[in-house]
Length: 74
Image (cartoon, rainbow, N blue to C red; front, side, top):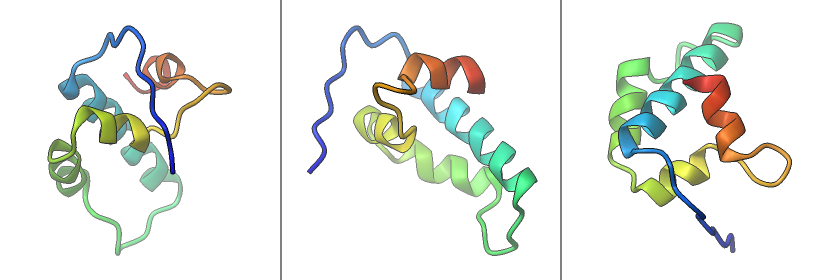
């Protein structure tokens, strides 16, 4: 079970979705698989998630923070 603690949330849901889609496009560019959803399909999937779920999707933590993720992908 993962426990998520958000301190001083500085990002909107839209910003998180945009950053995750940016990461998705980067990952698909480097390792394309025809079975992968398109960026548009991936965006729709991400838009259905809560902010907490979006933060989990970033796979961030102590070593690579949410701020680090947002700096790289926004």
